[in-house]
Image 1 (spheres, rainbow, N blue to C red):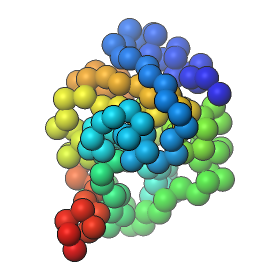
Image 2 (image 1 turned 180 degrees about the vertical axis):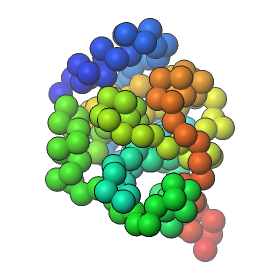
Image 3 (image 1 turned 45 degrees about the horizontal axis):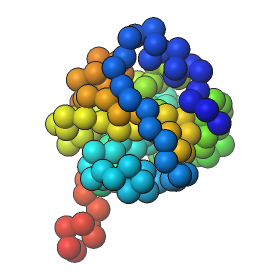
Image 4 (image 1 turned 45 degrees about the vertical axis):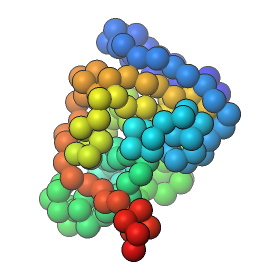
Length: 162
């Protein structure tokens, strides 16, 4: 599957400054980081949550975990859960399962960017496939995606030596 046409048209229409690279299939954000020879904190993963009946994109570094308690608190939700694979297939019909780009306006979703990732100079994310990624400055990503920056994630306990 090539770069989704909706994503390409959006990037072209916005005159986005980015680079596109390819690598062997990688199915997790940590695998993408390894394939791209980047630190996991530089690679974004898009996690879709359903909170109070509304789907939202949560964008965190590959080295972080989404904390649904933090999501509920930060977004003022009474409940939040991860989207199912069936829901993801319907929400992102032009993307390979789990490889959706974190640009919510393409899919009618708000985007929430974890504060720890927002402080990076650059961002790398899946481009709709498991073998293509987009690299761009964080400033450019924030211009395009217009995310709300909030604290939504935590480091895995194993990374802290617990």
